[in-house]
Length: 47
Image (cartoon, rainbow, N blue to C red; front, side, top):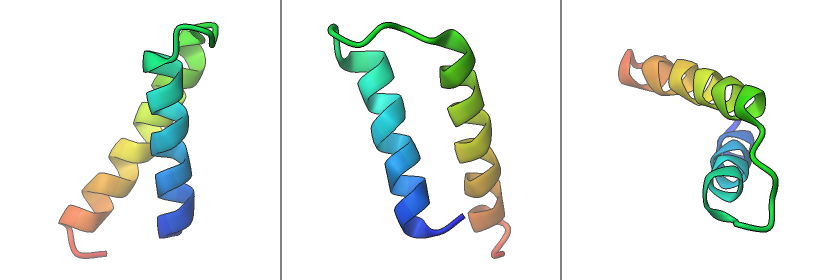
């Protein structure tokens, strides 16, 4: 995942969690968290 994709996923997650006009989609929230968490672990491992 590129830095741009990572930032886009973070922005989408932020909107889902904090924008009262956007309907909460728990499946999408968990999916984004899983993708972001995987990327974060790769960064921490140096890859």
